[in-house]
Image 1 (cartoon, helix red, strand yellow):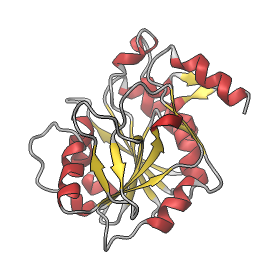
Image 2 (cartoon, one colour; image 1 turned 90 degrees about the vertical axis):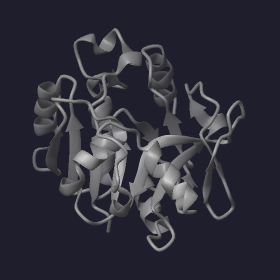
Image 3 (tube, helix red, strand yellow; image 1 turned 120 degrees about the vertical axis):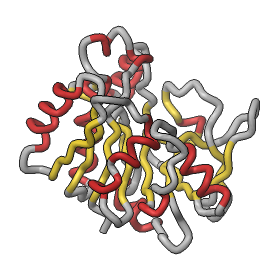
Image 4 (cartoon, one colour; image 1 turned 135 degrees about the vertical axis):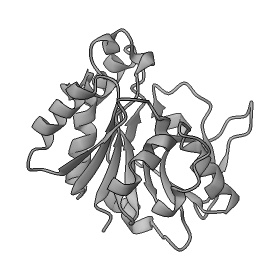
Amino acid sequence: MIDTAMLMAAGLGKRMRPLTATRPKPLVKVAGKPLMDHALDRLAAGGIRKVVVNVHYLADTVEAHLQAHCNGVMQVAISDERKKLLETGGGLIHAKEQLGDAPFFCVNSDNLWVDGPQETFGMMRRIWDPDRMDALLLLVPLARATCHTGLGDFHMAADGRLTRRKTAHVAPFVFTGVQIMSPGLLVDPPSEVFSTNIFWNRAIEAGRLYGVSHQGLWFDVGTPQAIPVVESMIAHG
């Protein structure tokens, strides 16, 4: 049972301006509640008992919200990045001791998705195989990545193994911001501030980066313009 998660909540939310001028992006409301609450509610429903949350921008506001929302629901630990924003990879290294020595989920706090036929975290637990995998990424087909404007991130083989999109090409799958990671990946940081892409590249080289396709809905809520589109889709099922 993987029951620990890292919730990424330290970013500046620049693409979401002007809404993030006075509030952190995870607390921007979509479909009636803050983005962070969508993720937290999914985590709680998926059996997560401890969540480690990194904070930087308007950190006090995020902490106060967590205390109010998660009181008695999940154990919350704060990974404090007030002094320096460490990006995703650096943030994981900073939170390593709090995450423990077992595999864990890592989820972006601005994630918003609707489960398909299976509950997402349970499905990923069933597929996770530590003997073959260093990370298991939840992907969504590019054609179903609502409000996403990129060219895709990964190609996925029949056995789930992932490779990168080549420059100036299109890839059929987009990373949703949800993954399972082995703590064994969190070693040898190249610097204090770096991206999770470094860990993924190492896993690809070792043939140990895998993916699974999300069968439900997923929304890229990256800009203010995306919010009414997403809310309309949710309201109409």
